[in-house]
Length: 386
Image 1 (cartoon, helix red, strand yellow):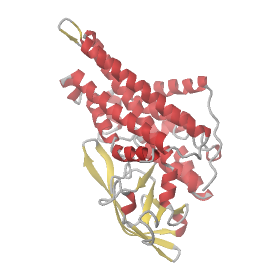
Image 2 (tube, helix red, strand yellow; image 1 turned 180 degrees about the vertical axis):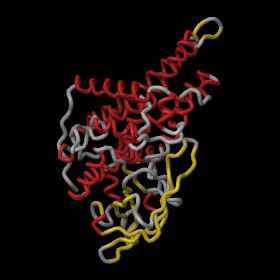
Image 3 (cartoon, helix red, strand yellow; image 1 turned 45 degrees about the vertical axis):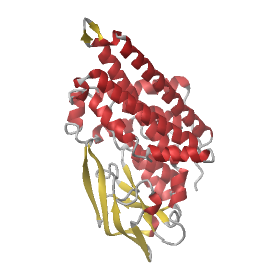
Image 4 (cartoon, helix red, strand yellow; image 1 turned 30 degrees about the vertical axis):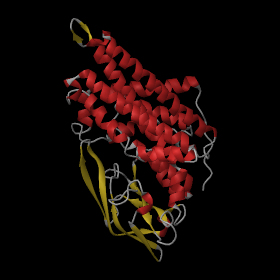
């Protein structure tokens, strides 16, 4: 494992300036439905290369990437600010989560050539995807069967992956494949760097209620050099476990931003919508619901930044309980806020004219990807010896 680079934290004032800069950018560049529709084919696509590269030029996607690869060298706290505020601003940059998760794997386990290729690509606004799940292997990642067979100085890949976020516009795929059937099901897995345009790889979109987000990947005698191995052969399971802090914090920070936007939209609506001669927010029934949601949202924010601070204090420390709690709590709370928002907005919350129905779609799936919330509960319970 590579030694993680030391991080340079921003001061509280600098962090606040970062928040304000991102919020202002989102307001200018994608603050209206018309702007977002123009950038995303009417909302069917979720990533705008134009917006993402503008953000990359400002250093935001690479804020926590080591300075030697062109990044800002900051920590998880700063990265969480970027993720939270871009999600709150509805910036169409769907690649940022998978891209940064992949970047973390290369930073920890890639060789120097791989880190230079992938991390500099991320800093420059490039995108990455990761392929783990298969039709028969979702939460049980250890049961995957997509095979990478060693033949001399190459690996020949055959099999299928599914639910691969953003693979249709990624530059590379970080593939988790089976390279051995010896030992337990968690042994014999290997990470491989596969170019997204590699011969023998076919990428097909999966239609979802959220539009074009995820893909099936079909590998048919897809050949990559032995140098494509990231980390050690047959050791991908332990490498994946080492990156769980990063993955769950990235997801938690992004959904925290969505939850805040759903809350903001709900609050604005109940303040201006009038029924029975007064704004509906003046009715105690809605006031109490808003108060409860605000309290839960504040708890979520404290949890995210507490875990981020722990990671910054010791990047090598494993935090299975805290990271899983953060992902679990924030995604469940975000779903509640979005559904309550839809209820308070009535038919308008269900209409595509307003963003609330998007918030509902986004938060519903958040409890599935990145490890279902049932798996998060299992992990948390195990840390208590159960």
